[in-house]
Amino acid sequence: MSKEIQSRMILDRVHTHVLREICYEEMNEIENFEEVIYFFEHYIYSFLHREEWDKSLRKTYSQAKIITGPKMLRRLRQVILMNKITESLDYRLSQFFLNTKWKNKANLINIDISKEELHSAIKKNNQVQSRLRQVELICETLHLFFVVPKMKMSVLMMTPIKVAANMVRARDLLDTLKRSQKVSLEMKDTTKFIETFRTKLKVT
Image 1 (tube, rainbow, N blue to C red):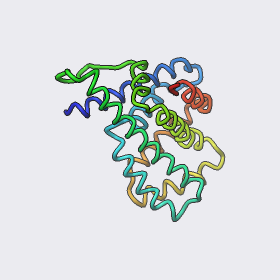
Image 2: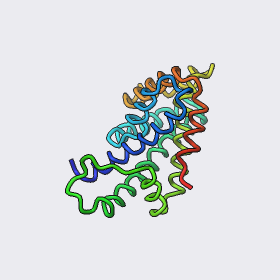
Image 3: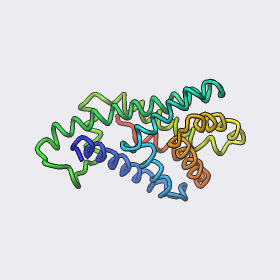
Image 4: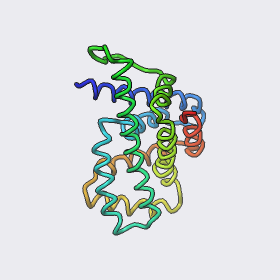
């Protein structure tokens, strides 16, 4: 495994660790804690999963133009943009750590970085605005994945996306929607979780 891939996986691990800290503080509102962590680790943050998920999204978006309204198309565009910003930000941070903190390391096995080091690297690389935009897009994506399934009109809202995803065989997106729906229905207050996420992940 290349050092580039190892470094990206370390960032995934740090993101997930920070999320765990947030979740622990909100445990009273999260009944299905490990399911939330799993969803983020394997769907929102996963470097290894991201490329296939992005392909699924783009295929679905091209097909969804025909069968869904502008509001849902805008949400799909936001998810695609979230992936793009996350990819760019993590790549920059990965290169930064490979050229500084991990420059003389033969391999990166069992190496980690703290939340403070991550935020410091974001600032040093002038990526604060990108981070703020990323956090906001993740919150908007969580609203789509976590909140929409609980709405009375959720079937009408989500069906066009699922139909479009089926038409292009976008299994990654369909799997994500199913997993998010399961997580959402087992959480008492997804709105509070999203607001906590927004507040605590911003770099100032």
